Image (cartoon, rainbow, N blue to C red; front, side):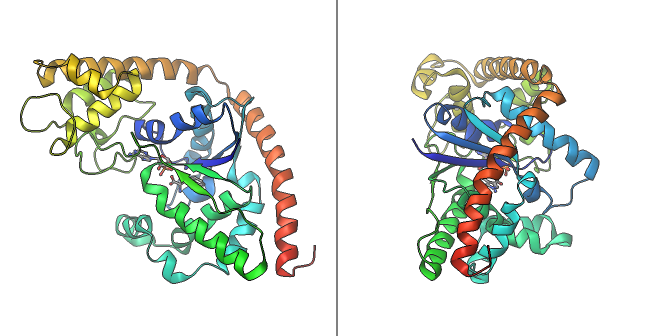
Length: 325
Ligand code: AMP
Ligand code: TRP
């Protein structure tokens, strides 16, 4: 049994990449581990968010966790800003983190290009807050998509640097990245990851997309040259579509390739569009059945539990560095 921590930013609504790359894994892990799943609202504001929309998105993200199968009886679900120790620890870790290390973060470099007019200090410091999220709870494993591996690696570095300066305090965590599905690619461009901030809505399937619209996005998805339904190098689009199909249906890619020998892209995409449509219908039915009151209760219980753990850990940390406790 390991301690598991992960989080997603409540920006727009979550997409199939977030589910297949991250939350699907959480649902499996919650059975045999101590799991903490966070809505990381303080990370979200490193890119400007409309306050009214943010408030809705925080609840929407938590509802999404529940509707995708995260079970509050097994895992704690909470909002980052409800536990003030996250920011407190982030400040302390800032005094250990090196500017040169943060400058290497590819997400920072990418977002600095995307948000040229708002390269704020928070955007730069983002990985240190993420390290605080993880280290505050003595986390062993961090299930994330491929793009977050570098941040977990930095978290390990910070834990070790802190321990070296002040004595054994933090557990150095490891990322848990699925071999399969860790990087779901854009439907309109299979060389880039599926992303909420993509220029075209045809890039992604949002979990709250109208299922019929989502089915159309699959039908419109870019394919590779040739006509074979096969994954592998030189077939980035089909590899991606087969990955999505396999993860949603439970059939292996090999079986799917066999099933579609001799079929064209049209028939394959039609079937996949139905799988996606059904998945979204089922998800949205569950999502719409969760009331605000219900999700607020879950978040409240989660925050109370996490505050207890966080307060205890902060006492240890403060003591180590010579602050009065
Ligand atoms: P974010 O939407 O950036 O807050 O990401 C939340 C989680 O989803 C993280 O674990 C990401 O690594 C994961 N994720 C985001 N986009 C993708 C994608 N296209 N494929 C797989 N995982 C993803
Ligand atoms: N940075 C992560 C992302 O964009 C979200 C995140 C914040 C996170 N804190 C975390 C993920 C702690 C895992 C653990 O996807």
